[in-house]
Length: 122
Image (tube, rainbow, N blue to C red; front, side, top):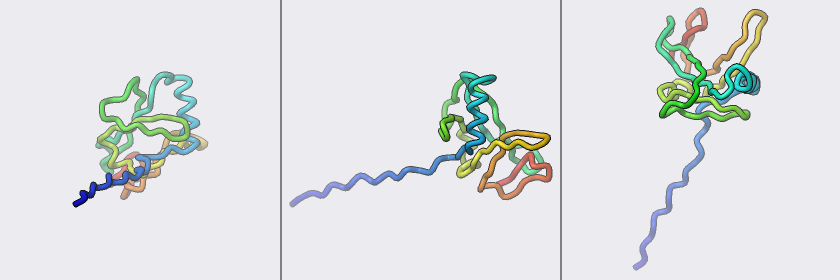
């Protein structure tokens, strides 16, 4: 009587946690090469604003235990583990306008934003 061995389950590659646009990558590369050399950008989500959640970004010297590492367009950034469920499928972009410039998020998990655009809810 022959024994059948179970085949190992095939692991499929997971989609990236989030993406970085080319404009955001270019801006991050500039920041990493100048004022924030040796640091990485960490993205987290905090409770604040009139809609309840807001994106927080800070430069850090090293990842925290549990930080997710995102690599896209040749740059690396960190995502706080507690923010991953809010950011799955998001894209970070960098936009410049006449009066302001900054990183913005296109997040498919958002259900709405406050009137000023500073916070969101899921």
